[in-house]
Structures are given as C-alpha cells and as structure tokens.
Image (cartoon, rainbow, N blue to C red):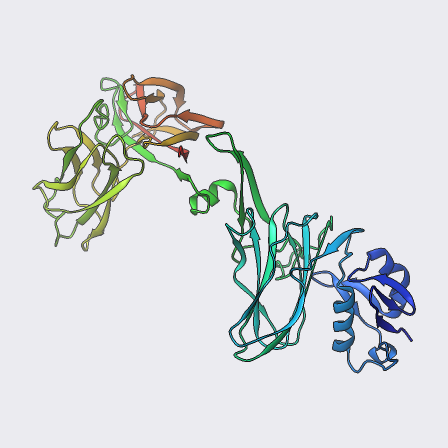
Length: 488
C-alpha cells in the first residue's frame, strides 16, 4: 500500500524520497505507474486511477477520497518536473493563508532563471486568479487573462505559462464575501515540449503556452535598447501578427493605414492624370501652402441637412505642416450652396459621408475646395459615400514605411489596354520624384511589396500618377499599405 509522507525536505512515497515540489517524468514513469499515477489530460498533469483506499498518509490512515489524495499529491509534488530536469520554486508567489472579504493576495515580482512557470492554486471559496507580467519590475504591467481566471471553490487550478525573460507574479482576489482560505504554489523551469490541445479540438482553457507573449526587441532614437511585450488578453485561438496588433492599437508609437483610390476616366489626350476621381493632376498638395478654410459643396440639392442624400460629411486631414496627427471635422451639407469649414486646413486626405437621408448615399458629386486659392483638395463622386483620392502626406514627427502597393487598370468596354503608373513622392521644398514605375496591362493587378519598406520622412507628399495610357476610357485604381512610426 503506497504511503505518502510530506517530510521537511523530501516527499516520501513508499519510502522512496522525492525532491520537495518536484517530480520528473522519468521518476513517475519508472516507479509510480504501478501505483496508478500517470501523466495525462489537458493540460498534462498528475492523474490518480488507483483506489484511493490503497494509499495512506503519514499516519498510516487510508485516504477517504480521490480529491484528498490528489490534493496532497498536487500540494506536495506540484508536478514541477514536467519535461524538465531542473527548476526552482517561487517563494514570493507560493503561500497558504486566509483572505478576508474583499482582500487580495499579491505575489512578489520575480525574474526567474527559467522561461516557464507552472501555477497551482486552490481556494476554499470563490476567487479569481490573475497572472501578471512586467518588463520593468512592476512599472508596466500586463495582465492575463483580461478578466482573470475564475477559481472553482475547493477545486485546484493548474496551468503552465511562458514568461520568457519577464518579471512574473500571481494575484488572487477573494470573491467569496467572507474569509477564504487559499493555497498557491508556483514553480519555474524549462519545460521544452509543452502540452497542447488535441488535434481538431478547440484550445482548452489551461493548454500549454496559455499566455504566449510576443516580445519585440529594438532600439529607440537615442540608441538605447528596449523591449516591448504583448499578451493575448482574451480568448482568441489565433495570435495576431504585428501589423494586426498595430491596427488594433496595441503597439505604442505605431499606426497603420491603407489608402485607396480610383480614376474612372483617363483618355490618351488627358494623361498624365493622378489617381483621384476629379481627374487631371491632383491639386491638393500645394507647396508652401498656408492653411485655409475649405468650402464643401455638392452638385445636388438633395445633399442637405434634411435631404434624402448626404446630410453630414467628415473631412480628414492635417491642420498645419507641423501637425503630428490627422484631424477630422464634421460638415453639415447645404446642397449646391458651399459650406465653409470651421478649421483651416493644410492637407485633406479623405472625405466620407457620416449621415444620410432615405437615399443612403451622397446624391451628387461633393467637392472640397480651398476658400482662398481655389484648389480642389478632395472629390467624392455621387453614390460612393467616400472620396477615392490615392494621396497622403506624412505627418510631422513621424516616419512612414511604405510596405505594399497594389495597382490595376481596366477599360470601360472591357477591352485590352496598357498604362504606365508611377509612385511619386515629394519632400518639403523638393519636387515630385518617380520612386517606382509600373508598366500595367489589363487582365490583372500588379502587387509590389517592399520587404523593409520605402522610408519617407515627415512632411513628404505621396500620390500616384498615370503617366500614359494606350486607349481612351481607361480606369486606374490602387491602394497602398504603410506603417507610421513616431519619431519622438
């Protein structure tokens, strides 16, 4: 009959000593399988199948339930050696105490010598467990999961987490509304092959790599090395790529954009034209321009505050050449009568319908024109609810990395044709340079990826020019993707 004894320095099973809070897989396989104890389940952990009455405690009293035997095995051994032959026990996050109503146990920040942690927590009453990470010893804290892990009263929780070279601690919040006894054990190790979910099944709540963290290393503008860590705080089963994390706002000092545009009527005699629906060369990037108010007007009387077309539109752009971010202003339309913006504007990159009447779209063409110079800064064709100008200006204190370009041409009658389109950029005080030239044919788009990105400085104007077409009634459309990095 296996006897379980919790000694001062060792745990004894059938008289054989095991390291405290430790059990290697080899030890388990070689000497305990016959006792009805083995690795299994999701996540992988100790499972007891032998009759619990066959086990006795240190006082030679048989166990009265599986739960009591399993709790002692978990408590004494903790399965810290899963896949590892070395490790250490956390002193600052392992405890056995009683929490008063509303109180919380907060462990110590620890920077382990190992990349993984295993956590065993049991609470007598309702409680919530939080796993917390920090790259800077607690100044910045990432929490997993966002809402915590709900602990079932009396049932041990066991999990494994990848921490890398981050500071780590646990936090247990008493939700019982009364005194609540808790018991926590945390160990660190290098567990190599981690348990995963069974193929063709969903990811279980305690699967290995339960809180996989993406860590990005780099240098700031002063040459100092830094590290940013990100953690999946929800229940997502797929971890997003870096670009998606930027788009979701999870990466400080980075932003992402994908402008698109179209020119639906280019003729042999009118080229060159830029890709925007007003036709001709784009006039919204005047050099040395002093910001002016904009006049917004439609070709239809239905685009009014109470009309069936566009009622309000939003213009988006830069207020000045020193603006470090884009700003928006909402304009209430007045049909064919121009409405003057409240702000003065340096650049406009987008216009879109915010609200509309029963028609659900702008009834007429809407033009955004500088009130002083008379230059058109944007144009929104009837029925589209958004302008189609493939232009952009890099804000101040930002660096733009142009990552991808997609361009295509078609013919209005579906006939074959060709065109030459160039990516043009102009730095402040400079001239438009043809940075890339694309020889286009109908039948399929051209896609260009700059692996490292085309780097463009603050204040740089961007547009796409159709330099020539083979036939009249040529349609050109495109989009580009960029990442903005704050220079500060």
